[in-house]
Length: 216
Image (cartoon, rainbow, N blue to C red):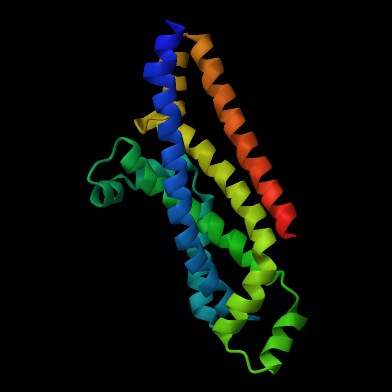
């Protein structure tokens, strides 16, 4: 019976969780990077200050980050259905997971870029570097280790969100823990899924720390 659970239920759910995590982090990083670029450029101390643009984006990022994930999933069901064509399953879960990940990652990248020494930026500007050259050749290069550390934290947060997504039909380890573990009073399955999530978190954290130390 144990082997049947592993082969038919737990391992497919494990790979579903990995798939949701990988896609949502990839999409969230792309969107978050674009948001962070605009936030950094338009900040009052940025390379191209635009108070209103920064204020609007900053409000949007903070608003989305303040939403509990389970409430956000329910609130954007019509939007999820429009984008994914369905409101249940792993494909539908990727939409709110990405929406949660993008502002989180945007804030991480924005803060990392703002920590770069202003003297380096001024030195690059004195040599005639354009704003884009300063962003890509100075600020991003210096901020990469901090960004990697932030992305590690974001990945762990999104992984926990994938478990919550299982509560409303997204699949993955969260759904297995809830349906086959908690609701069926099967402590063995509950224990296995929790251990697998812990192992995933440890792998993400250790990998992120190794990359950070190598780049630092």
